Length: 143
Image (cartoon, rainbow, N blue to C red; front, top):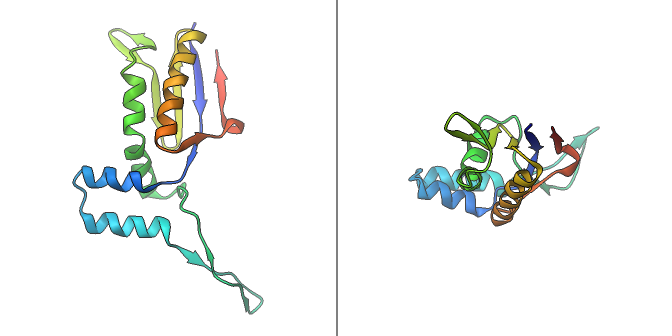
C-alpha cells in the first residue's frame, strides 16, 4: 500500500526567484526584464467608451504562460531536493520516488501515513522559506 498526496501550489514570485536566476548565471538584463514584467504591470479597462483608472496587476504566476513553467521549476528546485533527500518514499528498485512535479502540480508519494506526514512536514517548512502556500481546496490524497 502506498499513499499519494496531490498539491496545487499558489504563490507569487518574490525577489528570491530573481536572485536564484542570477546565481544560475542568467543574463542580468534578462532577469531585470522578468522582474519588471512580474512586478510593475498596470492596466485599465475600456468599456463602452469609458476607460477605468489604471490598476496594478499582481505578480502571481501566469498559468499557461510558457516562461512561467520554467520559472516555477527553478523556484521550487531546492524544495524538491529537500524532499527527495529525505529518502522517505516508495522505492522502485534502488530509486526512492517521493515527489513528482509537473507544471504547477506536485505529488508526494509515501509508503505509510507516518511517512507521508514526514514528507509533508519537510514540504511545509521548505514552502514557508520560499513564500509558497498550497490551496487546500485543490489538494487531495489517495490510498
